[in-house]
Image 1 (cartoon, each protein chain N blue to C red):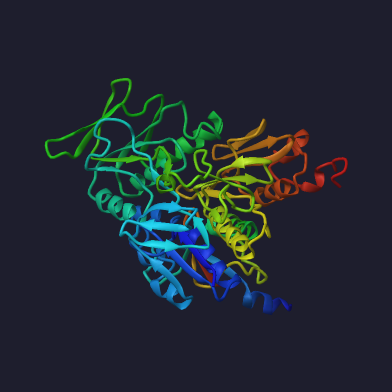
Image 2: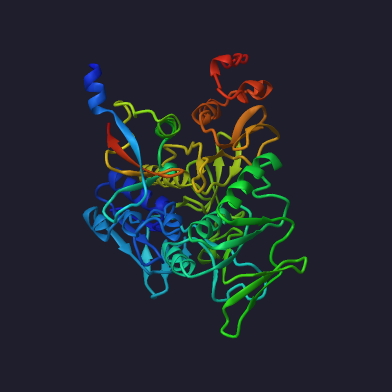
Length: 413
Length: 73
């Protein structure tokens, strides 16, 4: 009987466990997680922190879900090492778990700011359900906030502050939010959205240090310009540090994440990886890439499981991801790899509508839509078809996109 | 499908202010592209959801720019 061991019970690990049970009904399957609860909806924990959603709808699996599928679930279990020669997983309790095939789906941990008092009481990072509970509890009694990290995770803190009535300063290092994907035009729409909920973007700033009161609770952030921002709540979202420490010595190729091919295989026999932690070969992009979206993680877990069960390269991972921001009264959607590409086209349509498309070798590889999401499925279709369309960007920037207006490219009809 | 049957089976999105513990909730990022498009069109244009849309469950809450419950039209 094959023993599949999965480290991590996020959406990719859980998706893999479910698929493995379908593909290999007689196998032994073990899921190990250092968290104290089974799979929950990581996209929705921000809604809980905002005070809008109770806990119950965020849980996805009860422990019975695993029992019903004869999947062994080990909660609160830290993996301390992997020995690929002996095919063993070591845990903090001193247990050695044998595996035939191993999936690493451990994701990341929020990166701490390397500044004084970054671990003070009142400084929050946002990744787990437990984090969200703590943020909600504190946000409900906080008055003045500071947010650090001008990206997709930082804006969740802005939304929490807005929803919880915290007047906040959003300290950004550059001249705009998510400057790697948005021009000034697009970012300004997001800045206006922040201001409308009581969050003030501060540019060319950041945090040089946090200050605390006598009880060790944060009471200010000081930026590199010497400006002092009083606060009793701080949210830090400057990125993720991938949880690969336990793999030291296992021989897995890493490059700011675990390197896998399009089949989710690492360079070590019988070890696979899925989810946020991977640097995977993106067949649409034609190079290694990373993606932190829910749908991508779920699909990577499924594809990894299919290939693990087949003991072969049965199915490749091919996916166009989506990531939405739903905190404001206008929608925001990024798709694919909006920060990559060698060519870009963009247009602003109104005070709340903007569009940007990223191309590589003439093909769409990603984009951002603010306000008007109507072309999203058409752009994703063009991505999947890998059509060369950058020379017809004017058609793609029409408010109503009609793919029939695109001239067929030679050999692509 | 007869028009009356179509309307009987079609659904609409109702904006809701709060969610109870026993409700099922999904974020739009959990929907496939076609279902996302359906939700977007329904919200933007106050349009019913076609009976042929299988990606949404009656009674569930979808988190978009507001919270929306999928109701029978």
